[in-house]
Length: 77
Image (cartoon, rainbow, N blue to C red; front, top):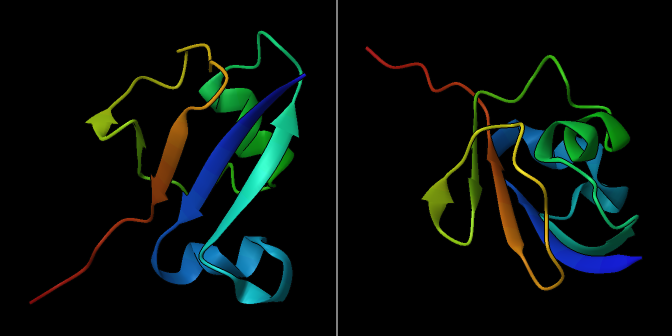
């Protein structure tokens, strides 16, 4: 198992306990960003993902200590 920090922005906070914006999670070694998104059940809601401050493909494998940020699609006018 590895430990990562997950931050959910905007309405994505609803996928974390008590609507918190961030949490520390333990996931199996070899977990991809896509698998993490599925673990938190936000598959259809994530528009952009960043790992350690860099936009990252969902196929990337996470490492211990990674800081993951998930963003929803923004709308404006």
